[in-house]
Image (cartoon, rainbow, N blue to C red):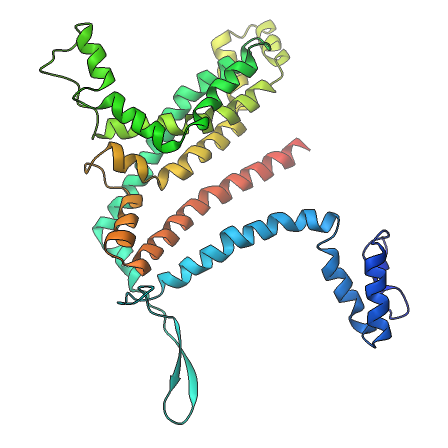
Length: 348
């Protein structure tokens, strides 16, 4: 393909596409009549971003710009501010200073919030504890979700849609309602689980199970809430697996268990990676489940962030906590994308 010709004599709209429409032609003609022909190529190229294929490509970038980059830079700016008794409760980074003779801009970046996060034991422990909880929850979801996804993928085609709907069904209910339902099940006095176990004689009424407000309750809530995020990518991966590979392994004398480990599991690695990231990333910043189901026994970074933001109104410190948490999560996301790129390159 030859390079586009930007000469003033050639229609600029023709540089973009062959079917740009009458609007771009009229716009270009109007610019040339008004002596602005030199700007026509740039204007047409800019407008072409919002027509046809350009608009389709631009929409995801606009979404990321509006709902990720702009909010992130706002939070990043607040993280370098200082707490103040004002609305909003932080100082501005840039101030116009008048010394009586001239005006100048004063940029003031406060690094104390980040210093506090890396030096205070409370924040370090909260980050590490959140990572540990997310890792254990991800491992539990994988242990439970892989057999589920494997059974769904090997089930009859007539019942697969029903099984898939049962996995998705909890999403039809509010997240908070599901968490409160587990509280009703697990609570010590009058909980459904204790009532059932006492009624069949397994437990004594004087010695019920005490699960709520412990780490066990928190893990139950997290695993239950995020299990579909592990099952769905695993099912999508296992359902597409070529079963003739297992038949070939059996013909070569490979036992079913060995064939599972040497054929099925390696082919399911992309689904395992996707499921682990889909569970681990939201579990690290989880706040609602630890707050409602673990009581004060577990310190996680989500709870610390809420305390700084809402109770202590230290927005700059809470913003710094958010930025560090985001950076911690970006690293596995980048690793996942690189892994996917390598797999795509290997598959070509």
